[in-house]
Image (cartoon, rainbow, N blue to C red):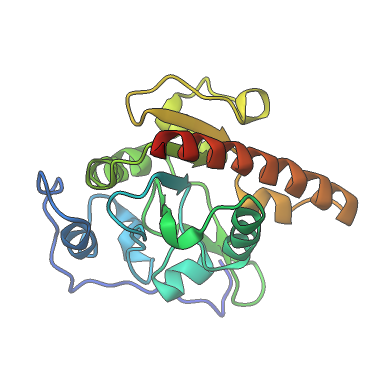
Length: 223
């Protein structure tokens, strides 16, 4: 761990209920999740980053976990990957203000860079995903999306099973009790990690194509 980075440990927050209150509103869930200590990720995160959007949104987008920018801002998908997502949604004809965006895990899991003060994303463990799952289930109950979109392998496998492969099954409607239509695509952060501009452009086009399919599903659901 880098010598210039200190972990921010918060010890004075009350413990939230083990499970969200049945029938809780999004505002109540947001309030209660802020005090969640179901796993240890709260100890090094700045805050809980809950979902954002309105009850009744036709589309719910679910990523893996908040990143550094989201942890600091307290809002999902506001960093570089979020800006790329906004661009892709706009190109697909989807208004972000009309969708609900959230993550499987609500706290930023990170490790300090060997040099400097950067906080490097770490993949959450299965136990951490399981501990946070009641909050996502409660969001699904409150929002009742018609189209659920898993962004990236971690989100897709946590919701659709470890056997799910985004590379093979992306952009296809998957059978699930979570929502009437469930599809998966890549996480926008994977596009940012493309090796060169040509690869990044090609991956972005595929991502937009998947989101246009999502837009069609939502339009049919609203008809």
